[in-house]
Figure 1 (tube, one colour):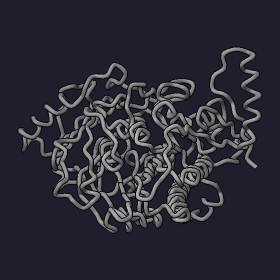
Figure 2 (figure 1 turned 90 degrees about the vertical axis):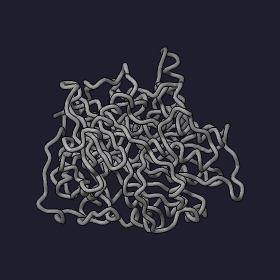
Figure 3 (figure 1 turned 135 degrees about the vertical axis):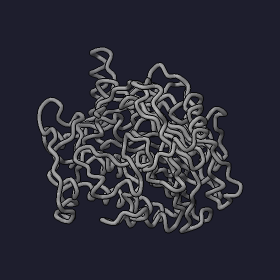
Figure 4 (figure 1 turned 30 degrees about the horizontal axis):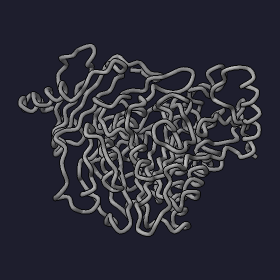
Length: 503
């Protein structure tokens, strides 16, 4: 049995501590059961707005799904989504690391405009918050009567801050508030709304609660509870981000099947243990595959739940990833060809760091087994969802609705003039995609006039042939975009330092 202790987040004086502790001990009986604000919940009627489930994998590469070319293992449940929906071949993440990618998703703005542009830590737990005056996708959905829930990893505001998920439009939250805490799959606590739920079976070196499984249980509960209401469910899985860890009953199925194995020596004791550094893993290949299989199985269970409740036909399900594959904690993207045909990995602005899989299933609307080359990105999700549900999007967002593409009306699809990214680690990096042209600029801090690399993606998706010298007029256009596409930030500058900022 898993035992939770509910610990209030803020304590102001001794007698309040006592009262809150009493309340906490009482509330521990519900095993972390979530409650939600029902003030804007509307009862579903026949033909009402569709439910929307947005499943976001963490550091899953373009080539990590068998529907996108993975050869060493299969992902049957995610592949089934593609068979029953639309597969995007040119979809881009909001950034090449976690927090800014999520910020772009939830604000509809690229990293030259969105507030959270990097993984900026706030101690002892959490990241720099989205400001209170930010209008998020969750708030837009809530405004038109949707129940909103976020499950998994947050990373956009430390507990209780203005960026806390419950202060940014979500009725309920369960999971990791802090990205750094999400580096450990057997955490000492998770967050259930405003309460910290201490996981006693993970004390010391015990591994009694595998967090993705508990978070998944709460995700299914959310669907069950809200089956009569239109809901927006944001499933921000931590899989397959490092550390590489899976329950033995899963890992044993893949042991010895992905040889030669690769070992990783991490932090297995001391004051930093399970507070950010990754644990050791002797079988990183088997562990990685185990994690992806767990994620794939959870996607299948979500679909089974929708079918059991009879709401699958009125539910849009989207699956994607927050950036390219990582190399941390012993991960081996070269072995699995995780970035597919692309150059680069997480923290790169080459295609391998930012081009990600996206699959959309919408019964009766999206043609089953279809595929699109429409260029789209995370900041397009906001206006797409509001177009579907009849909500409103801010006038200053960068996104374009890809609803026409989903409905098979690509001739009516608006196109981006360009896509822009900036990254605040490793000396500063910028990138632009303009049509089939891709411009990349590295070492922005040390050399603001660093040359722009230019690639023609129509013939060189691997970005192996820099043709900048052959097309000075294109380079000049991209150079102008690099200057004009962004607004300065007092918080995120191109010398950003983060927990894992290593060269």
